[in-house]
Image (cartoon, rainbow, N blue to C red; front, side):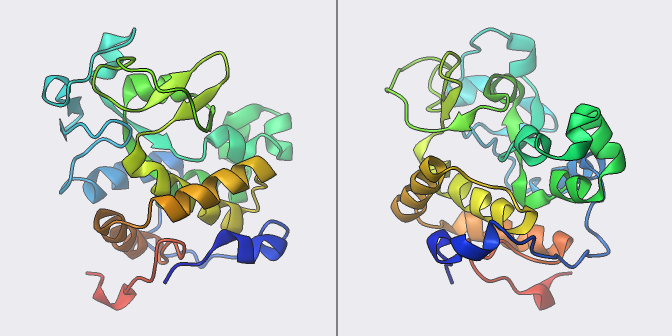
Length: 233
């Protein structure tokens, strides 16, 4: 089952969709990161470049990754929000009164969004830092920014073009976060993610991830497809 974002646009951007809080769901970003290590252990593949990792160490040579600037950070895995924490929180009152730290301490809605495992992926630390809170979009193709890694960052334009195989998942994650946490998307972003959702359909690994995350969160990402919570162990 795939739900198209355009059909939900009039309601989901205006109304916060309540989620059942599962007993095992992480309550903070710190808890979410601890849970995420186990969820990704079987695959152990980094998101932006497709590099394998063991523990917290990335096998850069095996995937042809060449550090752009920060070799030390490139060697480690960090946990990345596909929809950045800044985008989740910067329009909230808690952010105006003390930034991310204040939101993570005092705003329950923000804390649920920041800890949502559907929005969390393992990333090479250097790429995580370079992505910052930049939006996704199309960029002129430039080879070699990170060696063989196909993800590109334009620091001047504050844009990131992810590798093709993850564009659909990024789109469906934005749809999910927009629906469940009342995050507004610009018309330009809506059009981009609708195109990516259509061009890059759900893959089997994405379905498997959705099922694993749903067993912890208590619900799946409906833009990816249905899940079977009765099969959770």
